[in-house]
Image (cartoon, rainbow, N blue to C red; front, side):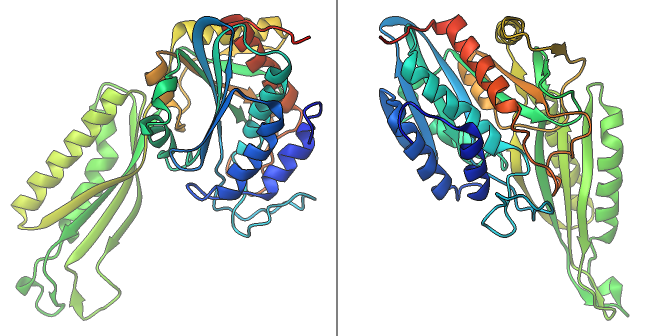
Length: 382
């Protein structure tokens, strides 16, 4: 690819074929770097927080730093569709549309090579491990990222169920916080004929499941606690169990409510196990901060929609699903995520038949470039 061409369709389909799981995006990162190179960023920093990449375009005059983020990773899903560009990696596919997000942000490099920012700088960030909630924190914590703290940060996510090419935006909380909580209960096994000689965690497990189900209704803020898995002992009719595991997903509209949910559950586990002479372990996985949109940044997205004649909806409530962009909005102060409609009859995200609509590539690119122009200005190279 030379510096005068960018075929988004070809790029998106090639990225789709390379689908890789979180923190394994080596081939994807290599291709991103290869595509970026002819578009002459002033600096390109690789291996940021994993396989992440920062492509930096500097303006001639002082001004703010604007970051536009895309995600590198795919999902452990087998494709059902018979695409001509199906994933080459069995059991791994871009069923969340990150191939489209990357292509949109790569197209900005093509545009910025010809029309660089007039003031400040623009950072095109390609982040690892969005699906696990690990990547944003790792990228931001990397010393290579620290000199480029953004003033503004933006990202989009494709959204089935909304008319094709329409935008949904909201200030304040846009995506819920969530985390997976794993509670392991340890008792003592015994012969099933003499359960009194052991200490089964069965009753404690049942109480925890009941508590988790009822807890959200006892709090004033909207939140959810979904038990996703429970296991008691092993399939052995001669043994009274000594071990149990309860796994649940905690979800809330604010980070403060998430802290409250977590605190209540930990305290209940501590009290319950002490009363039943059990011991316990607690750990967390897939931790996502709430994505909280800044009002000014959300307003800039609405203005960009107006300037590009894209229909924009104000959403009445946050998306319940989580997105690993909340840490960028916290760091930037002026940040926002928006959704771009995939069509009302499109398969849902993470469905085996889902595929990113290529019609969104030019829309997303125009919106981001308009945001850059509003914040940083652009100049045309002669």
